[in-house]
Length: 160
Ligand code: ADP
Image (cartoon, rainbow, N blue to C red; front, top):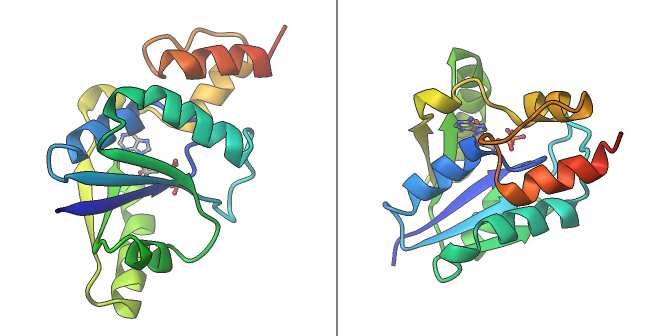
């Protein structure tokens, strides 16, 4: 059984994340989508809300995906799940330095765990959770960029 872990803040999940997940599913039998905290980011949605949105958007993949919140060292989580692969998405060169540093760091501490990168689909290269929140905050349309459940949640959060 090929098991991988896709960690992120997912504040909220976008179709860019969904695309990475769906493509990772072609490579792995089970994918743990793990919602974490990034000390450099203050989140708009609580961990519970972020998990709920992901679970709901990924319902049709129930048998292959587990969504969980985890607040701790990612490497410990990966080992606990008997996995040795971390999946990350890459959008632009600007993602590279951050991802490169983290992947190097993780390999330094745990030689048996590899980070693999899935390149964004062109259509989503510009898409980020922060851009989505900015649009939603000013009541613009985010249709087509996020799952429907997220669209609804954003409308509630940034009510006129
Ligand atoms: P983090 O705070 O851990 O970077 P994010 O939720 O911002 O969490 O992103 C999780 C992962 O998904 C990262 O590897 C990020 O590069 C990737 N990602 C985010 N948006 C996209 C996108 N539009 N296309 C491809 N990958 C993406």
